[in-house]
Amino acid sequence: MSEIRPIEWTNGTLKLLDQTRLPSEEVIVEAHGYLEAVNAIKTMQVRGAPAIGVTAAYAVAMAAKELNIPDRDTFLQRLEEAGVAIKAARPTAVNLMWAVDRMMGFAKSEADTNSIKERLLAEAISIEQEDEAINRRMGSNGKDLIPDGGSVLTHCNAGALATAAYGTAVGVIRASWEDGRRFKVFNTETRPFLQGARLTAWEFKKLGIPSTLVVDSAAGMLMRRGEIGCVITGADRIAANGDTANKIGTYTLAVLAKENGIPFYVAAPISTVDMNLTNGDEIEIEERSSNEVTEFHGIQIAPEGVAALNPGFDVTPAKYVNAIITESGVARPPFIESLDLAVKSVS
Ligand code: MRU
Image (tube, rainbow, N blue to C red; front, side, top):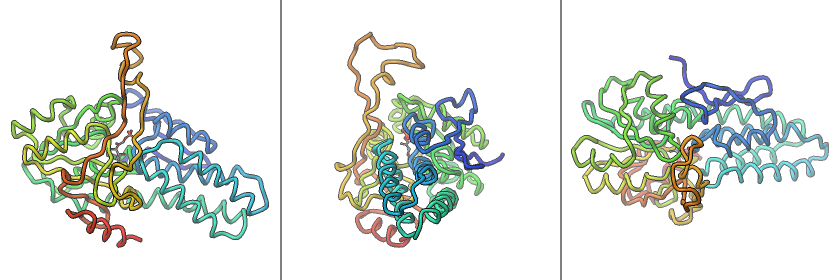
C-alpha cells in the first residue's frame, strides 16, 4: 500500500486530501494562496494537530510569496499579520501556533525578502518531512506498549490523515502490528464529526489492520467486560504537567480506563507540548457549531430550535495518563519532570 499523505506541495500549490469527503470520495482540493490554506483548516478539509501545523507552515510560505514588498521591515510586519490570521484558524491544537512561530523565526533570520521567501518554502517542506520521521520514531518508541494477543482502543483520528504521514496514536498501533504482534483494535466513531467512523476506520482498512468500530458510549461496557487491554489517543495540546487536550470524549475514556485498571496512553510529538501552560485549565477549547450535534449529514435529527452545546475537545488530567509517547521516548509520571526532559532533548 502506498503511504497515506494528506498534504502535498507540488508546483507551488498545496494539495490536500479533503477529509470532509472521506470515506465516500477521495478528492484532492488545492489551496493556491495562504487564505485558501487557512480556510481548509477552518473547514476541516485538513485536521489533526500535526497536519494543521504542517499546513500552517505552508500557509506562511505562501503568504510570503504573495507579498510584493521590497522593504524587509514592512514585509516582515505584513507577514506577521498573515501569521496572526493563520493562528486564528483553530484555537486548541498548539501545533498551529508552534509552526507559525517557528516559520516567523526563520523569516526574521534572513537578510532580504527574496531569501525569506526561499527559506520559508524550504522550512515548510522540512517541517512536513520531519513530521513523518517523528511519527515513525514515536511508533518505534511506543510499539511494545501494545501486547501481542491483547487489544487496544483508539479515539478520533490520530492516524496518517492527522499528520504528514504515518500517524501518532495510530502510528504506534501500526508500528506494533508491523513488528509482528497481533491484537484486536477497536476504534470509536467519535461523535459528532465522526473522525473515527469516517477516517480511522478508512485508514485501518487501507493498512490491512482489522478494526472494529464502536459507538463512543460502548467503550465503558467493553472495558468492564475485559475486552480492552489499553487505550491510546493523540493530543492537541499537552500542558507542562501532562494534562492533555484531545478530541471530546477522551477524558471520559481515560476515567473509565483508570476505573477498570486499563493503561491509558497518549502519543504526540514534542511540538504538541506547550510548556507555557502550567496545567490543562489554561487550554482554550474550541466551541463548534451546534448544527454538528442537531443535524446528521445535513438532516435535522433534533427538534427544530433545540439548544445544543458542542465543545470540540476536552482536557484529561495527567493523573489518568499512564505514559506520553513522544519522538524522544516514553515519558512517565511525574510529567512535570519527564516532559521537561523530553522537550529539552529535542531543542
Ligand atoms: O478536530 P480534529 O479532528 O482536528 O481533532 C483531532 C484530534 O483530536 C486528534 O486526536 C489530535 O489532533 C491528535 S492527531 C495526531
